[in-house]
Length: 250
Image: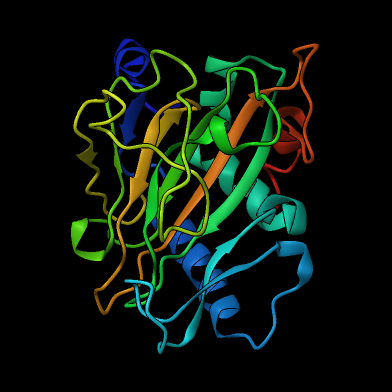
């Protein structure tokens, strides 16, 4: 099980997980997403999104994959064992219990030169359903730093629960927050090597900048929630027990 300071996680709303993903699994994930990025078409079941134009929003650049969804549901034999090997199922059992289930599993690909920003936001504020005890684990599949769009978050931003989000001019993806206007601490950058990860609470405010570099910044996130809660509702739900059943798949 990954070594986690749960007191620090409860205080800050996030925790770094160095070397969470084995080299073989990191390479396998990158090859999978590279193949989809090069393909002429992506199956509708992946609910793909694309960046088109330059990272500043101007037109002219090529269309590149920005996001793929429902990874675990599309290919459980690949992703289930990989997630189990990483130890995230152990974290879910520690934080949530045996009733934990995956409710999201997606790739965030932020392609070179055209990858647009992701404005500061809380995940729970954008989700259709309330996900009790939800937390995310974000895996770096390539180096992640401010040079290629990075990943940042505001320590302690989870403590007050939901913060009202607002539409932002010239940002098309979803409503967001402003650290200064919303009284949040200055966001810190997570500089990650391939295979590193960071976990965060569902109310932890985070985002990333545009990728104007010549290198893709690839990441993958899995979200667990408490499916045993009487109020739990989800479009997709993959129970922890079903994940564990896939652990021996080659």
